[in-house]
Image 1 (cartoon, rainbow, N blue to C red):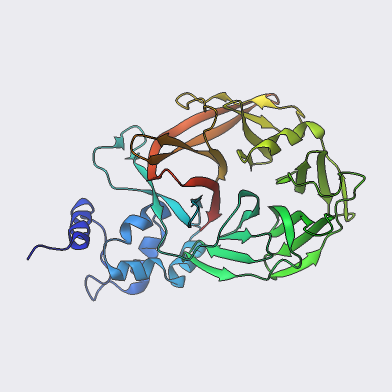
Image 2: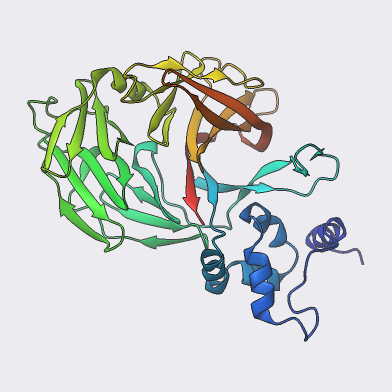
Amino acid sequence: MSSSPEKKKEKKLEEELPSTPQPNPTPSLPDELLTSCIARLSRLYYPTLSLVSKNFRSLLASPELYKARSLSFRTESCLYLCLESSSDSRWFTLCRKPDKNKYDVSKNKSTSYALCKLPSLHSPPAVFSGLVSVGSDIYNIRSSSNVSVLDCRFHTWRKAPSLPVELMSLSACAVDEKIYVAGIHGGSLKNASKVLDARTQTWDHVVSIPCSLTRRGALNMRSVCIDGKPHVATDDGVVCYNSQVGKWELGEAKMGSFRFSDSYCEVENVLYSVCDGTLRWYDGEVNVWRSLEGLVGLPKFLPGVSVRLCDYGGNMVVVWDKNMLSSGEKKILCAEIALERRGVWEIWGGVEWVEHVLTVPIGYYIVKALSAMV
């Protein structure tokens, strides 16, 4: 009788990773030592290692492993991607797959990346403006007031305290383990603001954005943290919340043009976005949008292409899609960009790698890319 496809896959992985330590291969290798060894590996390798055996899967999902990673200062930024279709939500994480044919000798490392689907989870629906990462958690805040949390250590969902009010629309961002949510009430169309303390898991009231700064019921809101303050861009301009005095203030109007798409992120206090197919940046010192220089090897994004940006440990990850109409599929492509500030007026981007990391049915679209510290 022939072996099952799963057994063949496990056998192939064992051949490709001959030096991978097996759980308790001899009585002389204690669990603590094995955990310590695995904790020192980049988490990019964990999805591949989880295929080796059930014991490995148990080890990689153990609290002891992540305690060891924290104590040995091995926590790192891990990329997550949310995709949705009309029927379900899917979550993926970036991993490095074993591929002997793709090796960058100059950098002495594999250059083959892929997006690995998280284990079968009942993932709640998500929208770009309601997804926020804090530490090792990704919060999914929905206008219905439901709040779910993806624990990126164990890839499990849990419930968080519900938003105190139901909102017709909302936008959220995180500042110092506090999640600021701005939105509008569905019935009254009044502005509303709340803040969730991720450490205490409690909601607090924040004074609403006054109508003198933005008209009541502004539906098109986008939030981002700049200079340690939550900024909300609407059709009327930009406002920021000053927690020291407990009030909303006018922000720089020039900054607000990023709100027209979901192709933006903040990296080390600089705001990046995609405009007319190219990357640009803004910060409070320059107070003007400027093109990101360099980017050799990164394509210009055509109209209709969905692009998402994400802070990835001080670098920036760019994720975009490419429809293949002939096959009814969609390619997901990804690039990592190293950012270098040159004086006040220039930021250069060096493309570290660009790869096709996933193929999905054409009905899926990219919701958001986020990074979590794991």
